[in-house]
Length: 482
Ligand code: UDX
Ligand code: UDX
Ligand code: ADP
Image (cartoon, rainbow, N blue to C red; front, side, top):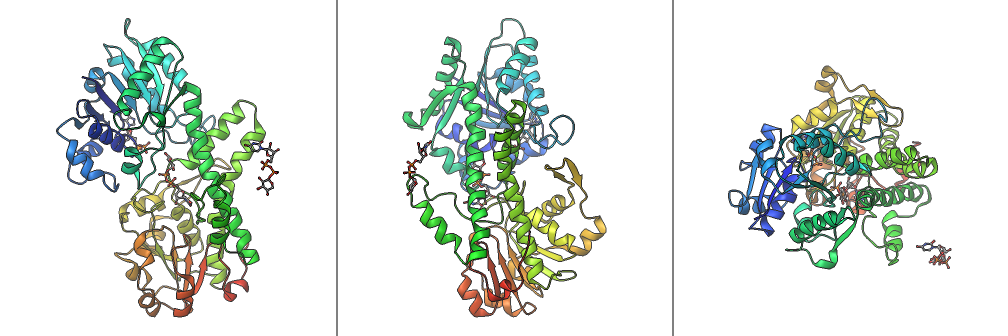
C-alpha cells in the first residue's frame, strides 16, 4: 500500500489530496500543516476554503483514507511519496525583492524531510517554484539526509483554478510530471503516473524532464495572464473608438488558433498565481541575462496595473472628479466568482484608489468576510515596480470610510455609485430598479466584469460604464486618463 503525505493544507494541497484520496481508495493520504487552525478547519464541518463540490469529496474520504494532521514529522516519515505544497510568496526584502520567489517555507520543508526520513522517498514539487528549485532541494536532501536514504525529486505542478478546483482535478486538461532522466528518476515518474492513471486518461499525462515541468507551470500562467492583459489593452482602445470588446473578443476567439476562452475583459486579473509567477519569470530571465524577455513579460503586469488604475480614474472623473464623502457600493471583493479568496484581488487596489480619493465604500461579497476585507485593506501593499511598501489607511480612516454590507441592496442604499468587481452570478439578476430608487442621482454603475445588461440599466436611468463597451454620452464628456 502506497502512503502519501502532503505538506501544506492550502488551496492547492487540500483539494488535490482530497481528489487523490477519492480516486485511489487503497492509498492512504495524509495532509499535514504547521497551522493548527487550518488543520482544525479541514477536520471540521466548515472547511477552511470555499470550493464548489469540495465538501462532498472530503466527506466521502475523511476518516476512510484521507486525514488532516499537524503531526508533520510522523506522517512525513511514514510516507512513500511526499508532496510539498507550501506557500511561495514574492520576496519583499533583500535580493530580488518584489520579484523573486521566497523559498523560505520550501527550504524549511526540505530540511525537515531530510531530518525525519528513515526510508526512501519520492518528493514531489506541487507548489509553483522557480526553475531549478528541484536542484536546490536535491542538494539539501543529499547533504542533510541520513545515510542510505535515497530521494527522487519530481516536479508535478498543479493547474487547477480556484472556483473549479474539484472539476479541474477530476478531469484535468493534462497532468505534468517532470523527473530526472535516470533509471531511478524514470521509476519515480512511473510511480506517480500510476497514481494519476487511476482516473486520468494516459494521453493526458505528460512526462518531461524536471526543468521543462517547472518552466511549463510558470509559462502556462504567464500565457493565461497575457491573454487577459491583451484583451484588457484592447478594451481601452474599444472605449476610445466605440468598438465593443465583447464583439472583438468573440470575433478574435473564433480563430481556432486563438480559441474563445480566457478572453473576458475585466477590471484586472487577481489571484495568488498570475502576478507572482510572472514576477518570478521576470526575475529568472534577468538572472540569466535576458532583459528583453523579462521586459516582455513585465508589460503583462503593467497593463494589469494600468487597467485597475484606469477603472478608478473612470469612476472618479465621471463623478465630477470627486468622490470625497460620497458613498460607493462595491459589489464583489474576491478575485473571481465562486471563491472566498482575496489574494491579489483587483478589488483591493480599486478600493484603495477610491479611499485615497476620500470615498466612503460599502462592500458586499457573498463569500468574503468583513474581517478579511479589513485585513486586506489594512495591509501595506508592496509596490513591485519600485520595491517599497505603500502605506494603508489608518484605523481611524478605515472606521470612517469602509463598511461591509450584508447584501447588494444595503451596499447601494444612499450610494452615488455601484462598482461591480467580481462576476458573481447573483449580480446578474439583482433588482437594479430597486437599487436605483434607493440611490442618489445621477446614479452610476461601473461594471468591471461586464455582467450587467447595459441597455436595460440605461433604461432604468443609470449612467453605465462597462469595461470596453461603447461609452455613455455622459462619460464621453468626462474622459478619464490613467
Ligand atoms: C497571417 C494570419 O495567419 C492570417 O490569418 C492573416 O489573414 C494574414 O496574416 P500569414 O502571414 O500568411 O497569415 O501566415 P501565418 O501562418 O500566420 O505565419 C506568419 C508568420 O509567423 C510566418 O513567418 C510563420 O513562419 C510565423 N509563425 C507562425 C511562427 O513563427 N510560429 C508559429 O507557430 C506560427
Ligand atoms: C490560475 C490558472 O488558471 C490555473 O491554471 C493555475 O493553476 C493557478 O492560477 P486561478 O488564479 O485560480 O487559476 O483563476 P483563473 O480562473 O485563472 O483567474 C485568474 C484571474 O484572471 C481572476 O482574477 C479572473 O477573474 C481573471 N480573468 C480570467 C479575467 O479577467 N478574464 C478571463 O477571461 C479569465
Ligand atoms: P497554496 O495556494 O499554494 O495552496 P496556501 O498559502 O493556501 O498556498 O497554503 C500553504 C500552506 O502551507 C499553509 O497552510 C501553510 O501553513 C503551510 N506551510 C508552510 N510551511 C510549512 C511547513 N514547513 N510545514 C507544514 N506546512 C507548512
